[in-house]
Image 1 (tube, one colour):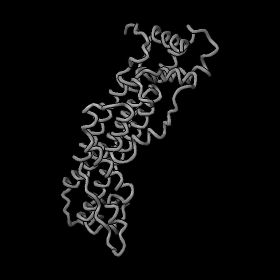
Image 2 (cartoon, rainbow, N blue to C red; image 1 turned 45 degrees about the horizontal axis):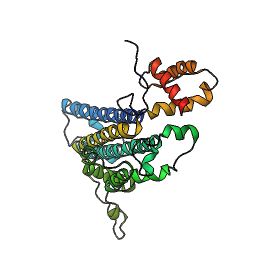
Image 3 (tube, rainbow, N blue to C red; image 1 turned 45 degrees about the vertical axis):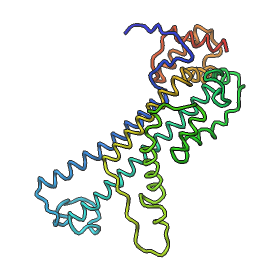
Length: 302
């Protein structure tokens, strides 16, 4: 592999995505690894039952000899299968909840990152007219009210969230807004599952009844559809904010965190060498000497 000769440029991203998105991608992979492990166990269990010649009327102790399950809960293999299907549906509800939660965590991270990088969005100034790195170094600039803006973009229905994003960042590309319906579906499923175990919230809280409300049904196909919509939304949002408001701010912010503790007492050239080592250990995209020296010089010029 040849040496990187790429120079540092504040508003040109070094990586293809934000570090925030890279973390989101790892959480996403973890979720789908869990999903596929569960589906493999479903396939194997039913295949083994079929190969063993099991019948739906078989007692559970015969179908699963020696299995430490609560046999009193099931009077037959059919009864167990019904319970397992309910569990499979519960897993699907959990998956949608995780999809929605992972997306909100990413969105909170990338929105706060974009505001810190480009605080000009807070006063309606042209994009990139205030360098958040200067604010980071000197502690001066427009008040961010960061938590308030992040909350507006991650709470409420998705119409309100998208409107809050547009108030900050201007008109959003169609490929961001086009997933509104699926994201709203995921949000509603997550709320019902979190507050009423996958049931209609009002029906679950109603007085004058002794029967439980039926659990909402969510298929694997729905999980796949909502998961794909969340992924495409995050990709489109990341691309838009990275190129319009973030640039290479994450690397600058990382340097700022290192500077007081590790880099302040050494010369610029050595600082660049040390930063190159530190960011390599951190796990971000590798930076060359020219890039690291350029970042150090840029920081000193602020």
